[in-house]
View: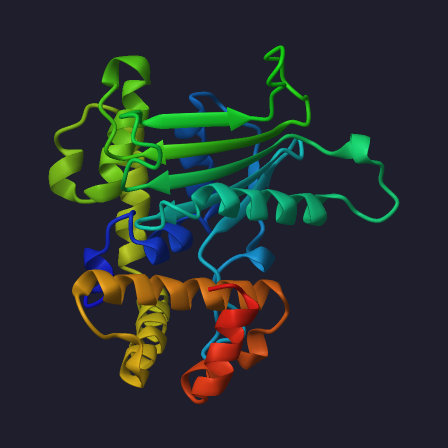
Length: 275
């Protein structure tokens, strides 16, 4: 994502993805593509979401939403971190459960929940566009019934015959979110989604937020985060982003500016959050 102009981002770029899904209609459109069916009205919970003010009091790039039946969804775009995905899905699941179960409510009040990662690599190296998981009994192969589900989508799949064409077209659109690609597909929903993305890219407000986001990451590079090969630099940028996300989730957002001012504090936070 570094060095790109906002208008040149693709949906695979985490900032554009999170920004796009702050719009409830866009979020619902993408969820309906993923699930292959019409869903009840979807609401996006922006209090859990991105985004930060100029003083960096809030930052996060995954999206938390629920529909009218209280089914909850956590969506995140992922471009590199294959190894930690399973346990990160566990983290997101537990976070959703804590958010959903209000004081005084019984565990039976839990509604189904879905953690969804959209990956630009094959997370399990089986060549599938879609991997779906639930908790099951190993001895007799039946579901636990906790209604906690995890879905990993892969833009690089090759089992086109086993998944809906609309989902395949969407996953390809994730990496090529431009007019040229949309002209090659016949699915009307991709065109509708692209119109939403195109209008978002024209937003001066979102462009300014993106520039602020990039400046913060650039500042970390100037403090010595970025040394060595490009692959190493990308890893460090993602590590910094995850650290900021975890700090916000833990109520430490006001400390974010210190990350680029105090190297000792930075090291303490990395150790605290096991990064």
